[in-house]
Amino acid sequence: DYVVVKMIPDNRLPPRHLHAVRTGKTFAVIKWESPYDSPDQDMLYAVAVKDLVRKTDKIYKVKSRNSTVEYTIKKLEPGGKYHVIVQLGNMSKESSMKINTVPLSAPDALKIITENDHILLFWKSLALKESNFNESRGYEIHMFDSLMNSTAYLGNTTENFFKVSNLKIGHNYSFSVQARCLYGGQMCGEPATLLYDELGTGEDPSAAKSGRPTDVAAIVVPVLFLLLVTLGVGFVVLYMRHRRLQSSFTAFANSHYSSRLGSAIFSSGDDLGDEDDEAPMITGFSDDVPMVIA
Image 1 (cartoon, helix red, strand yellow):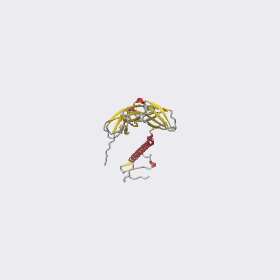
Image 2 (tube, helix red, strand yellow):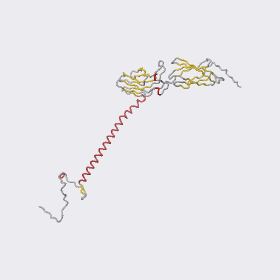
Image 3 (cartoon, one colour):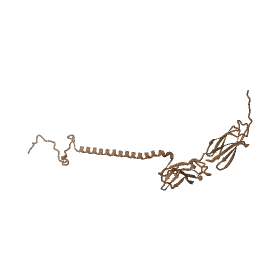
Image 4 (cartoon, one colour):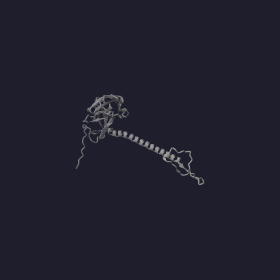
């Protein structure tokens, strides 16, 4: 035996399973379920959005017959904090949740240029990649001293550079640049951070370890190149000397070569320099010429 029981709908119940599906910089997608399964008529919901930073409220009306309802809240601010309340239009029990929108991105290409008595921070304009950012809002700069373990607020600017002076020798600093915080520092952008060491070179902490091998390579490669060039020049000089000596010896041998005898004729060391080039060479004696011996 069995019996079918149909529950009487209770419009005083709150919406069920309220949660955020996706959150962006200027919107949030929320989802909830009806107070009871399979509504047989359209249900009117009131979605109240309270801005916890600006202290303002907005109410939206949503009508649906579905058991699961999805709604997109628009025109929010990046980095904002909101309290969302959903209930039936008859002001029944409510379901609530808090959401935080995605803050503005960090500025790109943060660099440090060292001057004589100060440094300059440079970065790309955030408006190049953030359509919700206006340059009039500006940027704010913070500095962390690792030796003193303290953070200082240096100021804000609407430019894409900032001058920092009065740095202490032997201290390591970390500088951060972000979209200027609004409403008492409650709505800020993501910070871009750069390490400035005591030697006065700015570098990204993630690239600090990979910087040393690059420096060593920058020294070793030119030295090896100079060694190769020196060896090449040395080989060229030795080759030229060898060719010069060979040419001198060939010229010397040709000057003493006798085509009649088919060989080269060299005199002894005592006769060098005393030989008369114009004197005829005695080749021999004829049998019919008498030899006179004194």
